Amino acid sequence: MCGSPETILNLDIQIPNQTRYLGLIGNIAETIAREIDARDMDRETLAYNLNLVVTEAVTNAIQHGSPSEDRDSVRILLSYEDNDLCVRVFDHGRGFDLASVCVPNVEELCERGRGLFFIRALMDTVEYRKTECGNVLEMKKRLL
Amino acid sequence: MKVLTEERGGKTILTLKEERLDAHNSGELKDRILKLFEDGCRDAVVDLRTVQFIDSSGLGALLSGHKNAVQRSARFALAGLQPRVRSMFELTRLQRVFEIYSGVQEALSE
Image (cartoon, rainbow over all chains, first blue to last red; front, side):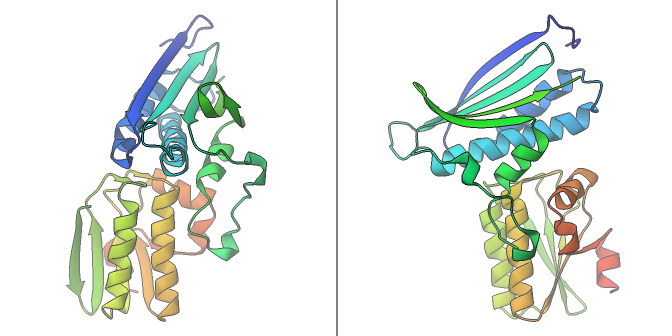
């Protein structure tokens, strides 16, 4: 991928809501990132970061988002267009208030709560909202 | 999860044989470390040199090990962190919490 303004990529992936597929989806995210020519970030850093963001978001959807057995998969949309990278992860749970998720305090040594911290730290914008297709965690990053 | 456990000079070395530490295997690692301390271990070193990827649940499992060690006045050290794994500790400032060594030998000589 040349990183030109015409570059358009859209991937629509559905995986079973099982953590054993985290490695697979993480590897797909890395492969995509290595194809992107971002001038302000080396490809391996972008690959790791996208792997992490997708892994955290999908883990969140698996663990908190699918209470009913007929919703036994997680949908991930990955797109890259005009230097904008966008990841959307859908879940069918009760949802949560993104604003109420605090930054973990290193002094308290909490074992949980760093997933959204990573996502916020590595992406430019993070939104969580209800849609007709379920709840969606939308994460965007502009790559220059 | 593939983990090798080895005793050396009264110290226990847990060598992870996984490239990823995520929500799929971090629960098992947490349990393995807890059992180690419950069985009387006083000095543990986790060798992470094969781990190329760690997420928040992986950090959580190691943090659990650290807290278990502190509760028992035992030692819990990490060794062989790959650069990108180390950067996750730095992003969360957890490098200030853990004893981190470049390799197992360095950790054992302390």
